[in-house]
Image (cartoon, rainbow, N blue to C red; front, side, top):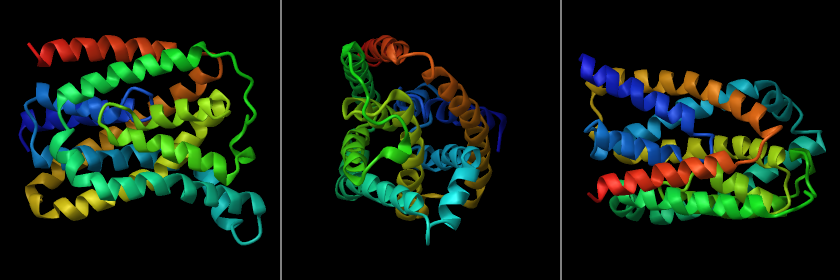
Length: 266
């Protein structure tokens, strides 16, 4: 792997890790970064999906004690059983629509103009949601029922559009449906685990023919970089949501999306 490829892999890994769990769209940032780095095409799309696995493993690591308690208590603990049911219900909508629309989305929506527009629209939606005065009815993930998980799962479907943001769709959707900012953020982390494992596995399976042995080092660097970058981003977001709203992310989306739109339509 030459120095140019190494730099590309590190930059894209950092972009993925820092943006995956913030409501600003990791896929959108990767598409724009790929355009700027001249790294596009089918392999680039597969690379972007694969390094997401590095980011999701960061969630697994940070919440390893909670996940282990769920696994070991699944046969006897009603709370653990409800948690797993909620994850299954939450992931089903995006799994179904993802399978149905996978080819269409990758063929027509993975471009910088779509991303820029989605960033702007998503930012405006965050502004609208944050303007509402509300008293959350759910303050902890353990209080959620399967119907709450289904609503967040349906909100997550919108993240199939590049630039929308999976975490943004689930967090803002959760707030609209009565979850506190902290509960919506935490469930978004947990919901990402099955969602991204399924998406990554499916995409690698479909794109395996496009990969070669010499690509492994490039993918590995991006994977590891995404993992450590995501650790920092998750810890930072958890601290942030305890005392702040999401307006700063809305401003970022609108400004960055507008600049990107101007750049790519020039």
